[in-house]
Image (cartoon, rainbow, N blue to C red; front, side):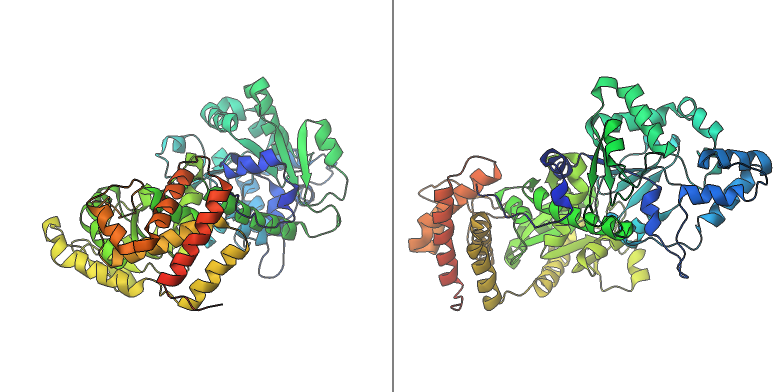
Length: 548
């Protein structure tokens, strides 16, 4: 199989191959420190202080104090004025009521990690996720660890609590000293994550007590099973990288040529590149219900063919029975959101992201139990779903939205009479139009870039869509109809042979190659190139594409 062309990047190219493969497999565990918050800003241009500056502000209220570091200053402040006043003062100094996520937070929130750890006590990370409408579940303390995980959500482990939970805040010497003893389940939870993930420290310095605590936890709990720790430094004006390495931490300095570059901007660009690379690398690991839907998830969004249905698990069972077989009349391939799979469960959030971006049409059921929030779907689609379904006995969100929804009958026996018919009309009216000149240019671009796998998958998708619209038989009538991978002499194959005539053999050859590629079998580059070229000519003729 030919490898798809990777996007060109600057900062991400500094990642070693093994670390990039870990990203693609969903095995990064980002651990965010105070340095990430430096890009945040208030409306009047104030940035949150570094820990050193924060200590200086607190020590100014403690006359006669000799500066001895942030934790000492925080501890002395609590001892002098009491913990409640310390919490209030931290909220003031960190501008928690006025600060807005910076570019680094916004770009990071577009990365669908399933788990993120932060020792920051502010709320900037979750605000960044909220701005992207991405489901984010903060984990604070041990009581939340038993929650049933949501595959589409990012879980934010706030290891040292936050200012809304002052009793679980870890900022003073006493807090640090008794933390492991008081939070055995939390420590075990993080240790378990670190057994299978690569710890990636972002926004930390060598003198950061939070970083030293987690590194100590790693060595104490995991010992020889500890995975290599990585530190991402946006810049390194103080030449700290060698010191990190001497302490056993692998370092990647993103901006080596300009040590004075703005760190927030560097991190924002790095996170943006990560998103592009992760999408590219994840595409080959996505799976649907069959070869056709799997190829649809993996290929570029040229003439998209997926009709993605998002509903609760119980309703999806009904949609599969009543709607999916009928969707073939629109030329599209139906797929339930729970059918979108990746090789590793940690990649599920990215897989769902990509399915949403690649679908031709999204059908969203507003009924209870839907695991994907509507605003998240709207954010990923850059607009409302093409079809929204409401329950007449529980209109809820549909009424609030004032949306043009299609009512789902309570009695499923009446689905085929009107509901499915109305849905099909909506899907037909909303599916993207296929412009011959655009299709010609897109296919030619793939061919010019030697993306032969993409050419083959796209050509087969177009031919199968044409089959479905014309009501031609297939080998899988009960599911999303696809071209069969085996040749018989009668039945559906006879009709297909009649339909494709002299193109029949090359189409079946392409289907077999696609099947082998979806099953990760070895495919001859020569066969792929030759078949892709022949299928391109078939599509050019059958779709009457204008000459370039």
